[in-house]
Image 1: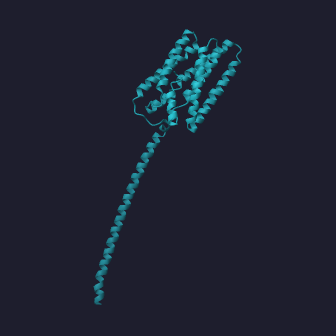
Image 2 (image 1 turned 135 degrees about the vertical axis):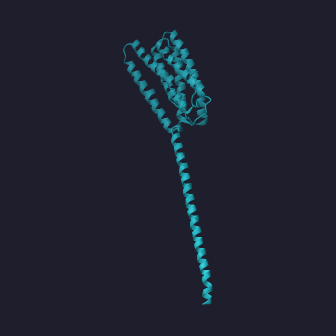
Image 3 (image 1 turned 90 degrees about the horizontal axis):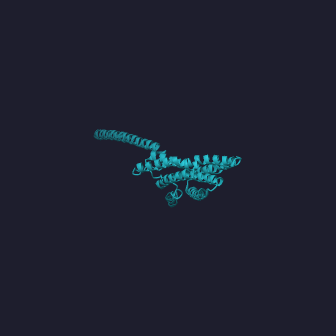
Length: 262
């Protein structure tokens, strides 16, 4: 359910041919966590359930990221590619190589388990960037409620599963996962009826645009005032010239009879 929850989001991306304000961080972190849990499951014994769900998770998250890369803008595509190369290739490779050198098998499982705990918490914390966006824009347009809801349910179920099989590395991260998921759902309910704000990519330019508009209005009013002054001065000059011309014509008319008498 967690892996399939973003389907409406990616259907929207496919339909509009644009990633809009959606971010790739939750999906890249989810892929990294699934890869780590898969490695942890291979080190353990009798971990068929972990191998199955995380294999499916790797396939689905990879599909999401491929679609995201297709419809993302150039800068976002480059950022996502760097993120995948850094974490899903570089850091994951370092973890496998460094833990493979540990001679004690049980110690290796313990180290990989703690690393998996850290990144499992990051999966639940990855939507915090979206929560920040919701607070800033007062809009839940780019927050996926199905994903938050399924993450919360998943955290509850995996916590009890880890508790029953006495696996701390499965149970521990889901405590924080439940708290993060609950916080996301509360925030969604708080802002779901709020007026939609601008798209995130225009949020940073919002204040400068307002200032620019004010400057334009002020300059327009100033130009109008100057035009009014110029027009009034032109009218005064025209009236002065017309009066001068009238006086000259009157003088010329008065001089004509004198010339005829002479």
